[in-house]
Length: 431
Length: 140
Image 1 (spheres, chains in turn cyan, yellow):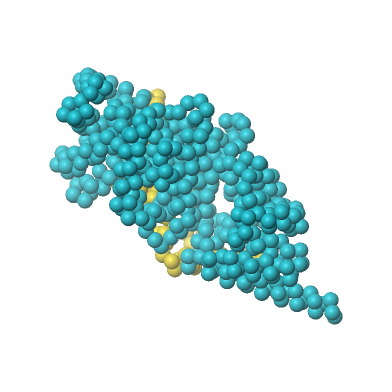
Image 2: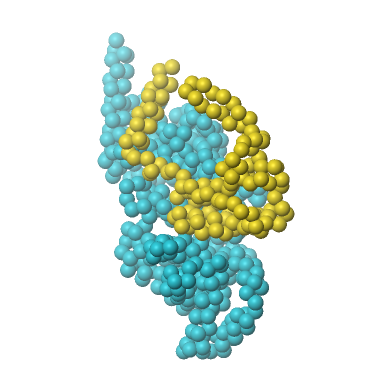
């Protein structure tokens, strides 16, 4: 193997092993920051030795052995040679003596638990959202600081700082390395899911042309979601989130036109959807449903996405079901945006007049006062009802509110069409 | 990126012999590992070629040939579809496939085309085709 080849292999091993390595070491040294440093030491050792010795048969165990040896050295020499650390050091040494297969077996049982603890600590609420995202990608995704920085379009030093500070916070606040129990569990799970979905959306909003890292954030989030789904298989919302991401990702290649213009869902070429991901999404949604209880917000959004995914053509969409799912979503997480979406679904299912009633109730909503989609949707309903003058006014208002030039053009086009239709109607009446 | 990991047939798989219990157990563990790592998209094992068929194309002619087929080592016996970051990562995963029965076999790793792999020209051509199709449908 040539030097660049082996470095790529080491990268690959790192990607597969790093989260397990850091998780295992955190259990031993009880400090996630220290564990990551030890893991990095092990990586450096691999970079130094593997080009000469070749990749060992069990690279994960090799890295773990180095990490633990370094941990013992650190405990012995370190200034914090207190009793706790001395104990850990001793415990480690006795384990090192045990035959390797036994050790590997013992570690195997622990791996899942440790990883789940690592997930929860990286997404701990004592950290800012930004810090949680960076730490999650770093500790669980195995991404380098540079990769995270490029993905979020910020300086590498910013991310490095963010990670250092996050690790210090976890250490200062003595955040335990554990899986939360009881009442705390639900809120901690949502914190994890929120971080993963944020990563996904960061990638989803970055379409193409830019650095490859950004769109790849979707893949990264999907991978994290799938991992967490196996670590916490009894949490319905984990499967709900995975389902939502799988189905949304299934449309990645259909949602952008050849010159980079966005293509809305109903105009997408469904042959370009990724049916492997759709099947996975539908299966994950079923898993969420099979765990019983009412569907949570992620599962409901996934169920809506699934309605579109199941429709062979845009005209075959089950709008009645989508409207009722939005109703359920509005009950779980009431928001004007959900209500606006519900209005669209209701209008598709029961006609524009019914949709208009919902939208009219939203016009006094302060949070939507400068949201261009409200007048855009309202204008659309009015146009369908033949109230062209009112429709034109709404569409022009929407055009004045959007910041996207292409969208503004589109809205003004529709406004002009309404003006023509209005003239035509008047002429017909006069004649 | 995605890779298809192709497992080749051998005399036993072509004879329709079920894998040993040991292989099944270890394969099960391996698959679980792939799933837990968030890497596995799909994976299936195939019946022997005696249950399959080939359709031979020659210009406008189509000839159906029933299995089994010779050249056992070239036949596909199963596959995984995995999502990874690099070819090296795919190789690392494939190296971990268990082989408890000591079979002499080969596993092939092939990268799956993604939308980005097609140049912009092909994409716009496909788009034109799509628009034509739409126009036709609309005019019906």
